[in-house]
Structure formats: C-alpha cells, structure tokens
Image (cartoon, rainbow over all chains, first blue to last red; front, top):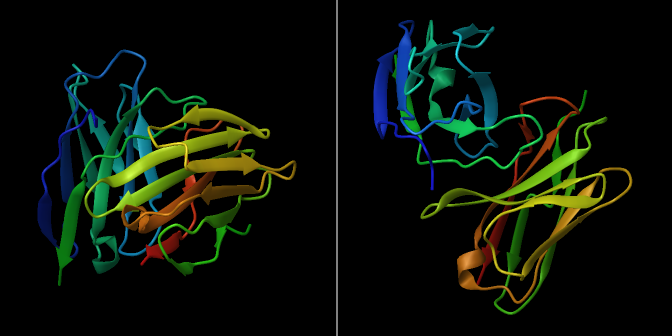
Length: 111
Length: 112
C-alpha cells in the first residue's frame, strides 16, 4: 500500500504557483520523498526528491516539514503543460527502484 | 541521448494467448523496471532487473515474467492472458548510483 496521502485533484491558474501537498506520517528515517508526474498517456516523469532539507531544481521546489511527516511540491509558475497527475512517493532510495505509486493528485492548470 | 523505448506501442491479444513486450533502456543504464498501470489499480511495480538478474519483484502471479539481456535490454512476458491483463505496461531505466527512474512511453495491451 502507498505510504502517502494526496488530494485527489487541484486547480491552479496559469502563471501562478501550484502548491501540491503530501502527507507521509509513517515515513522512516532512511526514506526519501520523491515526486513524479504523469501527463496524459505518457510515462511518468521524475521531478525532484529529498530527504530532510528543502530542494530546488529547474522544475520545482520541494519543502519538507521538520518532522518529515508532510511535504509540498511547488511549481513556481504553472503553465498549461504542467497539467498532469502528480505522485508523491516514499522510498528508501539507493538501488531500491521498487516505487509504490498511490492515486496521485490531478493538477489542472487553467488559462 | 535517446530515451527509453518500448515496442510495440499497441497490442491486441485474445484470452489465453501469450505476449512479449520489449524495452530498450537509455544507453549506460543497467537497471530496468517494469510497471503495470490500470484504471482500477493504478501504477503497480512488476519487477526490476539489474545485470541480467531479477533484483526486486512485485506481487504478480507467475504468469508475468521477465528477463534482461547482456546489453541491458529487457523483455517481459505474460502467458495465458486474462481480460484483466489489459493495461499500459511501462518500462523504466536507471543509471548507476542514481535515484531517479526514466520511464518509456509504455505499451498499451488490450486483451479481448
């Protein structure tokens, strides 16, 4: 079973920041938080991952709470092409490539 | 660099038949994972291969099998197809010492 809880759907206006929450209250000390997204009819795409510190890359920022029980993925300036299902995944990382996907959040970016 | 490629992209089979799907990972990637995606169950992990050895396995019946070749290309086979095997089958590859997986476009299998 997935170890994460995400809202089923969210809307965001184009150009605004999209903040996608994720609860992972049972996360273990050695587990990372990963985010992937899946645009309709395509394979999932890696976005970002982190352990305890906040992370930023060219796609997004990841904010992890101090107790590591929840996190937020931030798309700073959402575009229509960011409309997708976003998956928050907890995984031990390293060579453990067995990802457990939940239902994810359908983010719809509106013009 | 070319991405993960999967062939065929679409496939129609009938119940009881068997099917073989192919995945070519990104050059230099030695780990290949397979996932099944259905509307009801979502994305589920099937198995992972590394250096021709199955390293991780999900909770699927023995009808689902796979293998990896010395060039890291991988195949998965489903025998005695059932209607419930209709799904998008995704392959992902990973480079050494990395945390992210790169997914292919998938093979859409329809079982009639």
